[in-house]
Image (tube, rainbow, N blue to C red; front, top):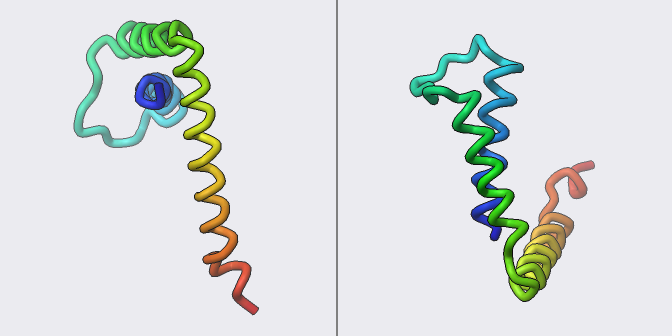
Length: 84
């Protein structure tokens, strides 16, 4: 489920960057971006929402566990908090 959410985010991000920063050099340009990206994002989000309830529970559980580990590590090893 995390992969589907990441793929949908990439599709949306491509559109946002194409619209907000058109002057950026891009070594590869997606053909028909205004068709492919919305279809890709919609497909990923559709599959994301169709998941079984047990998958939702696992997704939320792993996300919360990862967030706790990330925040715990960040609080203990923050260079900003230790600087005078």
